[in-house]
Image (tube, rainbow, N blue to C red; front, side):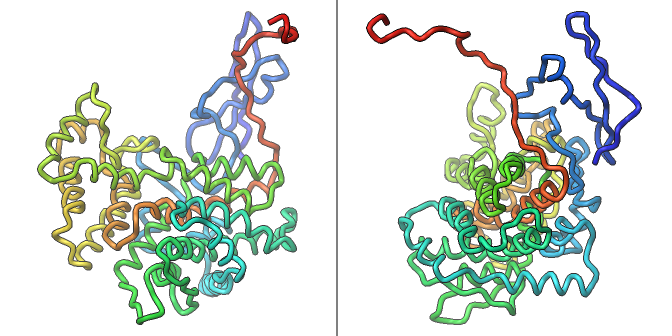
Length: 430
């Protein structure tokens, strides 16, 4: 919990002075505690909560100006280069990196929970074939609570941990099943002899007809995509999970709420928007025209995948994803794909053109992850589903942290602008 500071902020309203306590975290700016304002007849107005801390947390710290992202204090660059997704899952859930035995036990626990109940097949098959995979994922994750109702005591730490393991383990299985169903292909069961990313790729692309070999470069890139999206502080979907969790709702429904929030194009659809933008550009010869449109402040066209709402310098995740992107393109021998050629040309312009450099519109993680997913054959509508797989440990870790600590029902206030009190008029007198 943030430490109380000896300093106070003084707010003067209509000549009356109100003292507000200040709190100090381990990193980042101090915060002014405004909860006592309601006792004075006031509350704050902050659309989008851009200047409001709704909680304190020990999970993730972001310094957008410096391009810093830390998970439990560890820089994302070090984790991406030296660790892997499941180890980061353990870190987020438990606060420390695992020792050898702890790591092996955790990996084994995840492997033992990768299968889903056979009735889940019927649930998925009840959707239309052309249903968006995020609709399927959102609905089926919420429905998992019906299969594990006997271990949903949120006050029981063991139940919470088991649920965390189940969600992390089953999300790739459910995602692959939604992909297979849309294509009319048989579901592929998980394999416990494969790593986390390898298993997802195998369930997605294998068929019963022949052996499928997972390319290790592609598997490593997929693991990095999961890892780089594991948590990102109090973003829209994470805040949604926390708000739903504050009601005491079961964790499966809370994560389903997070999936629903992630589905929005302003949040989880960014890498999908990159591919849609490239489709709009259409041809490499049109790039200069669209770059000029992006520079024109009166033109509504925007280059997607460049810059970031939080990071005002280079997205630290993009540096790692850039490396994986080029490794995948080289490993797959992709040189003549027109979409990928356009992406590489745009990357070069963004890194060298003074307009983009001065405005710090660097390629972000969504730009590179979109290219990687396109290169390995993932359809655009699955991009946000893969984002959801990666973000699951962050969601569940925030939920676990909140439920295991001091939980307060979320109840944002509003600035009412509707009619003042008025009396009902019978219909014949209106």
